[in-house]
Image (cartoon, rainbow, N blue to C red; front, side):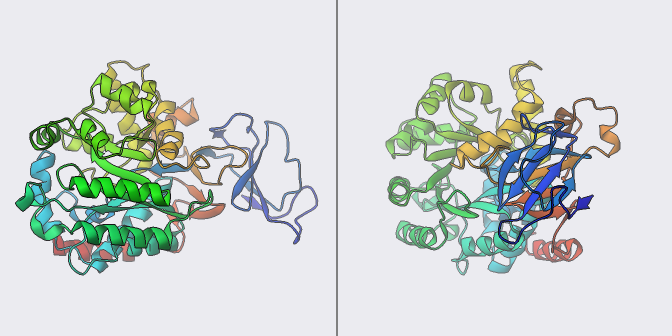
Length: 460
């Protein structure tokens, strides 16, 4: 229920609009039992239980049916892969053969297919409570030079924050890499486009809606030169670095045979071992390697559903966090997950980590939420995101417990993870509602589903 009149005298044209999210069923913040106040895209007040806001309010929104979380942050994805979900060519395979089956299909990617794939992935993410998404796009077939530009346009249209990584591959099969020759680019082209994208889109402000990161794909698809020069560019332009690392034993063997060292040693050799870097997967690290990552504050994105589908292994989340390494959460590619649902990913993280530690107490529902909020925000270098606090960005995910699966739940916050929430009722990004009553504003879901399904037929 929305009340557009303040109980304290109404609004004023001389100051920004003030919205009170009043009396939440539960909220992931201390001292906010009666809700929070949002103004000019930020959280400006936490209202203790039983009290009212200190200053005049222009609008009140009753959230007594809602569990309020910080907006969820997805730190690893491949939007284009929504076109090849449950693909017969790749099902029931592990990473290397899975990639080898899909590279030729993905090599046909065109601009219009990418556009609708990105739109669908971002819409799915928003509907699941995600307010910031990182995408790792590394495929640039001929004619797809503006892939990242397309993703920027789609993110802006939907109103979701993004960190878009200019992914890259320059090590093909003929040079000893894994991808086929026709899906790689040369290093000079990659580096020039990286600078172009940083100059055009990379906003370093704390209210930024678009940031650019540099992301050579993996040790088995990028040369040392590309890795080193990407690190130098990131330092020059103050942006982040991202790559796949520690994902499979096959990767370990490749690095040992090709570079004479393990993947983390290779990362250090090419100048990536520092707080600017976050890694996807991080499964096959030893205890000493976890400690090294912690010392250097290198982030890791845990991708539990994808890791399970590809049988890649179990990320040592607790070892990493205990060592001081920030750990976030990601859905990974929609061809290996096969979805783009962040709230569902929390439950996957909980189950996988409890199995990993063989202990129910070792990883809690709130630990899973922390991965997708404060942990992910740290990986992306965005401390103003992932928390409900005065001064933080007003990025919020509101869930109801109306579905039958929640009946009888006594801890509303834990219930979202333990009982398996599937979507948000309301989502706010930068103080603006982007999901209302479970539906994305301004998106015709039926038309999107039809257009995306038609595009996917080209990737059979």
